[in-house]
Length: 306
Image (cartoon, rainbow, N blue to C red; front, side, top):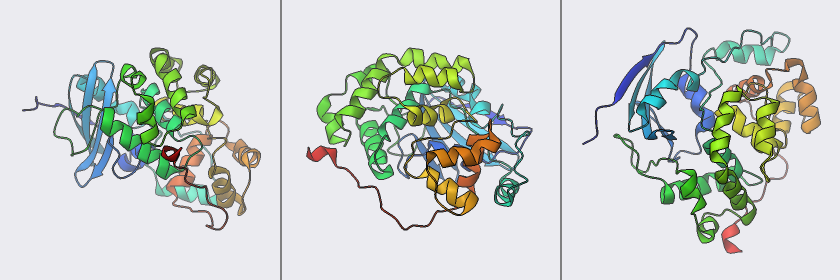
């Protein structure tokens, strides 16, 4: 029988939309580490004190949280930052862009999350390098199901706890191949796993920024895009647009000026909101805007066949 959970209620001073805020963490409907349901959201994690699972339920102006496992106290302590505490939107002025102003008005509970879990967020981003979302989600699900532990507490079937860096270092080459992860990405994961402890220490450097990005990019195979995707989620970086993304520049261009742009064009469009550029990106996402669907699609690669 599972031990009694650690229970808390988070009542933020500003509105928080639980589903919108946690959306950047979900890797598909069957993500082994995050599940949404009618009663709330389940999340599993490997904390510095051991595995933990959490159930978060929105209750109007508060969020009720239950956590199980050796890392339950650590998980509970991180709930405010996970749900946007310290993420200050007060200086963001989008009044000159009606599309953004309307989106902000309709999404008062949108916040930037901060997981404080650097290696996990980095590994997810590595798996997403230069492949489609379908491929990346499949690889994540395959690897977590194979090497992750069953989480504590009454979590939904199929959920797993993110493996330790030591366990990732023991994943054999054929398992990466079976998951559809090519040698370049698996080697990058191995390099990151070997310095996982130092990666976690970057949380003490604040909410992202050049210093953190430089430390992440010191690992061979980690570029601007991967570092940004990591700091957005692990550190709560408010100014880290994902330069180098296959889709985002076109989305930003169509949303803001009605035509596609490249990375340089995206950065030029976002420049008026320097310091808030990731907040603007999240507003565009939250708006539900979709760019026109014409144009080439990225080919799904099957590395298992090679």
